[in-house]
Length: 339
Image (cartoon, rainbow, N blue to C red; front, side, top):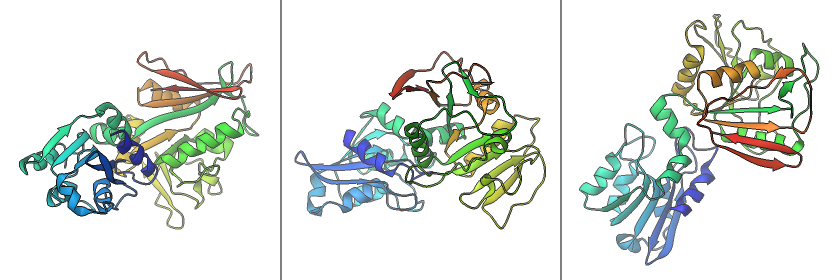
């Protein structure tokens, strides 16, 4: 099962909104096949593992290990549970049950009805952690939310400014790590002030990978057309209180919401319906603190720079007592990780 998890991680950044899944086939205590879900819309892990077996006659006395319950419904691909039955694989070991309503135990039931031996819950916690974004989306109907910011050693995100350059807190290494995280997620969010002051592109540049969808909260549509966030490098979704049609010439979509009625909940539910299951919030202190205040976050990465600003924009404060914190050192900087 540990090998299933290792294989599944190869799909990171390419399978969303599907979950990462790995599968291993064992016969006579030897691995004879492996596979993982490579890309959304393509073959699932079980299919790739079965197809990798050089001698299909061994399948009838093999065990297939899979990190997530085999699907039982027709989606973009046929049901994996049916394939396992068809190939006469007698024993199935499953990491965790699928939270998706169209599966949710039905794959397990189908295998059991076919008189297969089914074991569920092997390394269950680790398998559920692997698909935490998928679980969050299908149980809470919102994306899995990661907060990210950099702050000085005395607790400031930036100097007070109306323009000009921001305080430089990130190093070349930590900037690369941020871009790696961008390549692994579906969407990245900032607010109006960050967009206007920093002119961010929010694209993946210091790492290889796909650009996330850019999400901007721009209540009064203050961001001008020449802002990098509105270029054609990546799709941008703008949430506003005003009415504006979709920009057909670029990859931009304007969505009108009522900012008087739980705007974050409206935004998150809209993103969920659009298939954005993981969201990184890289905005300013006000936007980040609003997520913290409403307890709408799952992980936080805080870069603590070895720099004192003495005054300026105060960094957000996480007050929830249920957080787990660990630290990683990158030279003189420290990254705090909370969840």
